[in-house]
Image (cartoon, rainbow, N blue to C red; front, side):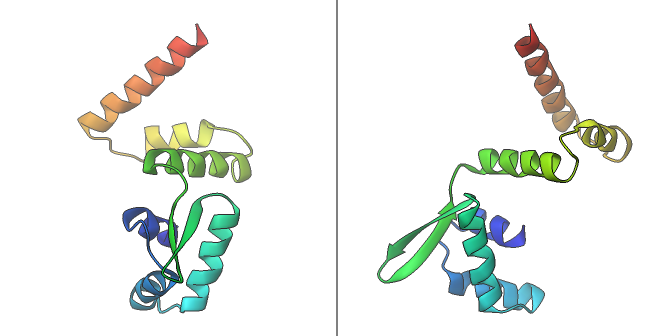
Length: 116
């Protein structure tokens, strides 16, 4: 997730740049960056383009779409397709700001409108 977040915030990042970030923050190596970035590319989260003989990685989709994909994957793979744990988390553990609460209400309204 840290690598994905870094690339989302630094589109066009190289393996070397991500490797430096990992070395500074996690003590991990460039090889770790390369392996994870290639896995993320294979899964469709990242894309790469060769510029001046160096691969530059960027998110495959916009930031909101990417995070929506990640949450969807999490729900399917970890929660077995059930959204109930996320709803329970939001109601019991999260102190939402007024803006976040309004966003959540808008999402629920959108879901209700789609159901009709």
